Length: 170
Image (tube, rainbow, N blue to C red; front, top):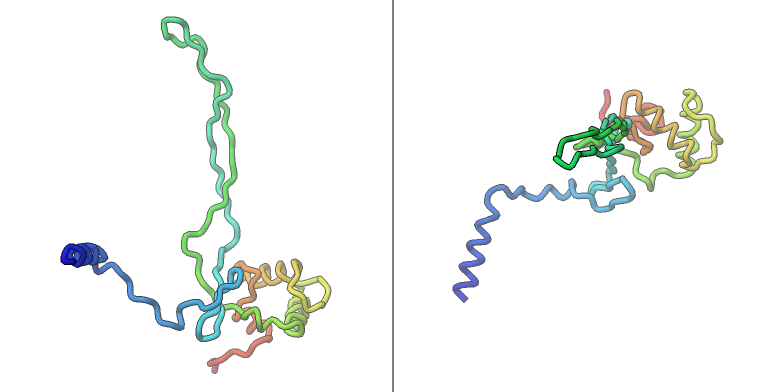
């Protein structure tokens, strides 16, 4: 019994002071829907991945190996060619932003959103109240000018479009 208690004390000491306290209850997501988190206070958040950024990587690829003589001297050097490859750069810590919660995106709200985007020249599709690919693209491009590059509707964008009231402004 004392051996088990000793082991618990030894391993318990390994945790050290690096353990972070748990976040406050309102900061813990209670619902995760696709890339939207609903918090205990009812607000929803998403991550801003930013515009896709690509980097070109150049690698040398062996085309023909070197040829050596019996004594080990190189009679023909290896032949290489350069190959360029595009890779997408992923942000390490994308910022969070508040979004309109999915349950608040009623068909009439989305139709109003589509009309507001169309009035600003950002949407040319049908006013059907559906979050379809055209609506998502319009949201992403409209709010990317001064906000997140995401098809999730930011609360700030909805306020700019006059779809939500601005709370706390004077």
